[in-house]
Length: 261
Image (cartoon, rainbow, N blue to C red; front, side):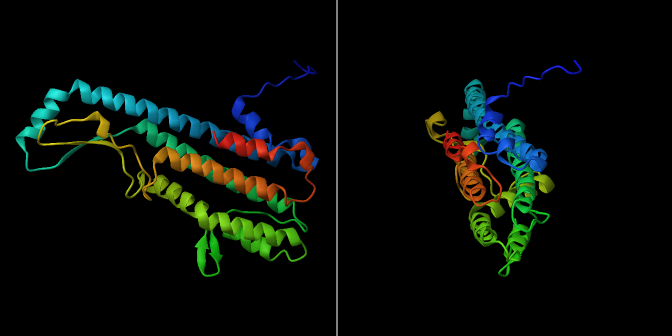
């Protein structure tokens, strides 16, 4: 195969990421970090899709499990009518996808901070690590501080403001969730997929099934769809502020549309 022409056909998620991370739109020396950003973004898009499918499977499996054990569950409820009961579905598949989404997000942000640092003037080594900003520790604080200190570049100040705004609105919380999952394996106050049982008939109503929710009370699926929307908004707005990027070769509006589905 030496000397052969390579024809690469990419999957749909990498193609979606390509709308913003097209290596031809950036300086040639940055192609590797641009491609790494596109790869991580594509991975996050894939992981989020997998999470939604895992949730659909869990709901179906949970309902099937309840229906197969209706007599036993009804008997258990009748024996202790004074106590409230709830059936909880413990899904490792869904938990794995939540891990994957948060890890892909954090990996992308770290790489994207490197790209930002190389595309402002003068360039610096970008990092999306935590740091204190105006008395508050936020994710991406190191990037914000570096951009604020980069006084020679007017776009650096706008990038700093944009990054801080998004970090305070959603990134810091998402990274906190990621860190907690990595160290403790569960999120405090996250609501699992569940179904309440009643001491009086009808004891079980599958229509009362309660979907998983994040600690802030937001539906799990809605949270990750919103996370993608927010990330696309941040990336598209910030790319437009970077130096030496041929915006004519990019289609940020396509990424916004793709993340909305």
